[in-house]
Every structure is written in C-alpha cells, then in structure tokens.
Image (cartoon, rainbow, N blue to C red):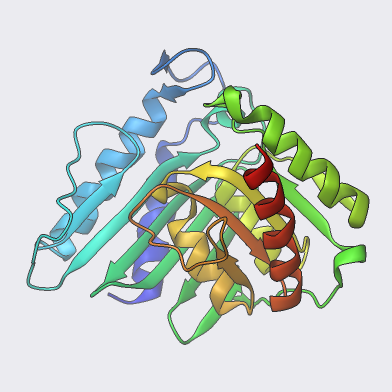
Length: 265
C-alpha cells in the first residue's frame, strides 16, 4: 500500500470524529480514567472496513474490543494493522485538541507505514520505512538539543496509579537535569512532537502497542531513537514502557535515570 493511500483513508474516516463534545456517547471501560466514545468505535470500524478491503489477508490489533490479533499467525502478506482510533480519548471527550487517529502497518515483522492525524489541528504526521517522515507533506527531523536543554513529554501511568511514585521520581530527576516537562495526555502526538523537533525526551511507564506503533516509525524516520525502559528495541505488537529521545546520548542518559529508579522501587 502507498503511504498517500493510507493518509487519504485516515483523513476520510476522521469525518466521524465529532466536532462538539455533545455529539458523542461516553462509556466507561474500567472506571473514569479509561473511557471509550462512540466516535472511537465508529472510526475503528471504518478503518477496519476500508483497510480489509485493500489488504484482505491482514490482521488487526486495535484498542477497542471485538478485534482479535493472533500472535504468530502466518498470512500471505504477514501484515498487521495497529490502530488507535482516537489516541487521547480523555482529551477528545473534554474538547482538548491533543487527540489523534493513529494507524501503523507492520509488514513481515517491520513497521512499514505510520500515520498520526490530529483532526482538531489538521496536523498529519506520516512516515514510510526508509523514506523519511513528514508533517503535512513537509519533511521533519528531530532537534539537536542536548539533555540540559531538553523538554520531556511524560505521564503518570493513569491506568495503574500504584506506579505513580516511581514515575514521579523519574520525572523529578529528569526535570532537574533538563529544561522542562510537558504533559499533553496523548502518546502518539507527543512522540510526533519529538520527531518534529518540538521536544527532545519522552517517558511513559507502560503503553499499549496502538499508543506508539505508528509514531515509533515516524520518530525513527525523523532521526530519533526509541526503546523500552531497559534501552532495548520495542515490539510494536506488545505493551511496553517507552523511552525516546532526539539523540543516542540523550536516550542513554534517560535509560540510566529510569533504570536507577526502577531498581530502587
């Protein structure tokens, strides 16, 4: 599949994202911190329908229910679509602009295509393996700032608040050694901001694959670095803690900080 075809599909289904917070239903999946909206479900169903028609043998790994991914299943193309219909659902439900449709294609074990589209800002981040990354058709690249001049995006592990102490300790130490910290509440856009040179560091204690799969490729193609909490490569079909940075040196320093606090917890 061509990258532009995927971009066109994502933008087309973004029409299902309601403009007003009164135009969709909110359902609690597991308490008030973990919700789904009728827009999430509509976008996911539309993406599966469109992408299945184009690649009938592909599998789907998606956030919302009723989609089964069979690990190790052999298909004609070994293709897996990894989809978050609305990353940052809590933001979306409250009218905050940082929410995105995130779609990644893993082909034969490698991330091949990635699109992260923010419908409320009309920002479309995209990448194709080996061909670079873009924001609205303009090439993007990470910044060259050092650790002391870095800004980190992060979160407090809202679905597992028992990890709040170790997260806050990591955030505090990184903050004391860097410039500042930001929290936008949506992993895919935050990782794309790193790819675009707006920030330099990223830490989240645990993410689902659909939170980071598409932006993993976008960041990598923009010259950035991304790993699990131990500094090892990520498997974008599995949940994981995620660290990312604009340079190898900055990632190594972030891994060191995180490792110290995880061992001590």
